[in-house]
Amino acid sequence: MLFTRTLLKRHSVLPGFDLALGFTLLYLSFIVLIPLFAAFLKTATMTWPAFWDTVSSPRVLASYRLTFGASFAAAVLNAGFGLVVAWVLVRYRFPFKRIVDALVDLPFALPTAVAGIALTALYAQNGWIGRWLPFKVSFTPLGVFVALTFIGLPFVVRTLQPVLEDLQRETEEAAATLGASRWQTFRHVILPTLTPALLTGFALAFARALGEYGSVIFIAGNMPMVSEITPLLIITKLEQYDYAGATAIAVVMLVAAFVLLLAINGLQAWARARQGR
Image (cartoon, rainbow, N blue to C red; front, side, top):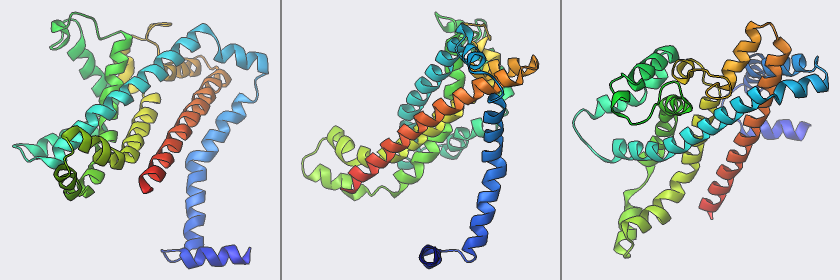
């Protein structure tokens, strides 16, 4: 115990490590741990058959499929296009670059309800964009995907930008002098360096999409078994005073999201270890 305390003090950077660590744990307990524990505690009041009937009903399973599927697809799309946007913002100079850079942060500042109403108006069948599309977007699962893509893009771009700014161009020039093509340079020089940050941005966008509510309910249509997301189902349970049922669904979402994020963190660690070699 004394050796551990001495080791922590020796490697601490900020003064007052013990006090700072105490405040950190206290803050995280009140903000994160206690609310999550309360959800598990409320769910524990249910019997196992009641819990299973709640979380495995056809309506709930349909909302799981839509929520996780649309969130994953939106995060994958944002990972690809977010890399392109971050690359353009870091590597090129063009007119109105500051405006474009500020637009990336717009989903952060815009209220989610406003974003949902705007997206619904744009992609409705009589909207500016929806009228030119041969398929329906608003009030369909595709509308959920569009909304989740909108709110997730900044996480990928802002995660990749610092890494791209620190990326030395000399390594790309060295690869070119050795005869590497542009694709080979990107695949073997640039992408391995960006992979940990890209996975981080993907994980953040995916986690953000799982809990999104305000921007989705307007464009989704909220049709049970079709376009109803899990957060809306939780709100519906709460409005019906079924608190145990709401927390049961929330606990399933929480555990599933934690497992997925844990797997993504494992991939990040593997990518960093491989890059270090």
